[in-house]
Amino acid sequence: MKTFRNIISIMVLTLFLVNCKNEAKPVIKTVETETAAVKELDPNASYAKAEFTIDGMTCEIGCAKTIEKKISKMEGVKSATVDFGRKLAMVEYNEAKVTTASLENTVTNVADVYKVSNMQTVDSFSTSKSCDKECCAGKTDEEKANCKKACCANKTDAEKKACAADCKKECCAKKA
Image 1: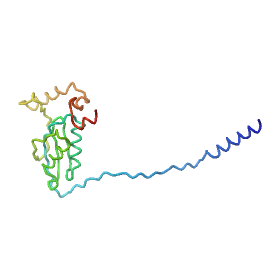
Image 2 (image 1 turned 135 degrees about the horizontal axis):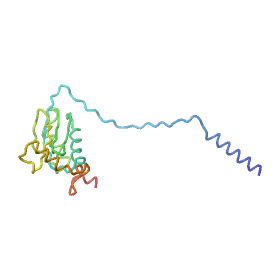
Image 3 (image 1 turned 60 degrees about the horizontal axis):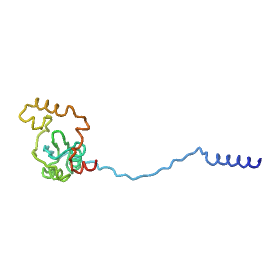
């Protein structure tokens, strides 16, 4: 029994000596990552602003943001914003590198259901948030604002951003 206790004691002592190290050296791993290319804007370029309507969007996150990202990634685009509520895209671009036709092609290539209309070059982007509903046609801006509040007042943020139930677009198919 005494030898058995001595053997156990030696094993425990050896275990502590081997495993208890004060100099822990962390393992350093190098992982290569891709860095997003920073857009270089030409300071001498002339930038134009275009606004156009996009029909066929059913959701803010899947549709509007996808279109906005695609336009923003185009060579020569300085900024792009897609307002889902107004179905309006606002793009600032280098006239030498981007045309209104290329903007339209980019939008329609995202999905076949998106249609671009009312393409116009503007001096400054419109900021009024008017209601585009049929019930608001022919009303003043104030009446349209009240109409829009009434339409969206009892909807939650999730309902405002949710895809329509019958949406067949790629952006909504991925969520299902």
